[in-house]
Image 1 (cartoon, rainbow, N blue to C red):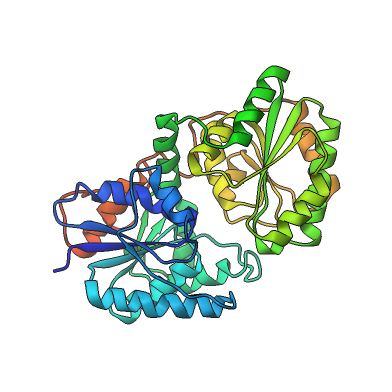
Image 2 (cartoon, one colour):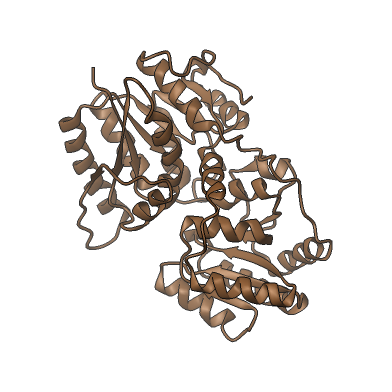
Amino acid sequence: MSTEVLLLAGTRPEALKAAPVAKALAGHPLLRPMIVHSGQHVGMVEQALSAFDLRPDAFVPLRREIGSQAELVAGMLRRLDELIVRRRPAAVMVQGDTSTALAGALAGFWRGVPVAHLGAGLRTGDLTAPFPEEGNRQMISRIAALHLAPTEAAARTLQAEAVPSKRITVTGNTIVDALEYVAAAKLPPRSETLLDLEARVSADGARIVLVTMHRRESWGDPLDRVLAAVRSMVDRHPDIHVLLPAHPNPAVQAQVSGALRGHDRVWLSEPLDYPDLIRVLRQTALVVTDSGGLQEEAPSFGVPVLVVRDNTDRTEAVDAGYAWVVGTDDTRIVAEADWLLGSHLRLPAGHNPFGDGQAGHRVVAALDRLLGTGGVGACTPELVALR
């Protein structure tokens, strides 16, 4: 029997969530992790893994000319299929809802290799938001052999879709493992912008608001409204500084710069590497974001989050009182921010509804049960609850 488990990662979030699994598998007596970089986002995967002293074991070279989803998935499918035929792994693990996850799941399924879906069961019920992620993850759920659900709610969603309970394990979200690992390292900041911001905030006795916008459905008019709200927020609260890391899309960068440049308390930075993101998140008074990742990470530090989307697939943060879904209406965003900033609200830290930092070990236990490699993580059969 093959002993390799292919851990696919093509984006930074995938790499961050795969890293705790790779760490947990490293001590396994039989299974061996093989981190595969799909080539989707060159540079970002390597940067994310470096925070864990990891690097890709294999790289899938891609040629992209037109930048379409069809071109990306077709290219990855061919290369991943070749890799699976060559390596004959025991299992393929995909994470979330990216093009890499969809291509990897299809390649594994077509070759008869069990597919483990990390982060399974997230849904908005709207195929247009997030797009194309909602469709990707629903398709993966139809062919996965093992569904690694981050929460009980995600597991219930899968069960409602007729996924057998014996194929579902509630593990917690491995991003909590990742942020705890990085936070414990207490690495110095690498971003010059972050260094300057920390010095200014310290000198002024001010607070930081972290803003991120990256989803395609946010581009255009919705982003304009959010940026108008951010500028108003800074004007209304003289003790806050806004940090907004750059989006890689040039058109989005131009839109952000046009709306916010010239304000001395708005900091437009280069993309932050993960240790810097965790460093600033620990200091942040408020997060304004359309990112799913920050909704999962902020509760660990007791930071309130305004979700500038019409719905969220991370309802656990809302139910636990850490996040508010406010849409992209600038008037509502400003009103909610006024209340949160005016009250200096800080929520309990260390009680993240998405996990307890042990998800990587639960994933290994679930892989043991799937593959019959036993012994390392004999937890409980079928549906495993967070403890």
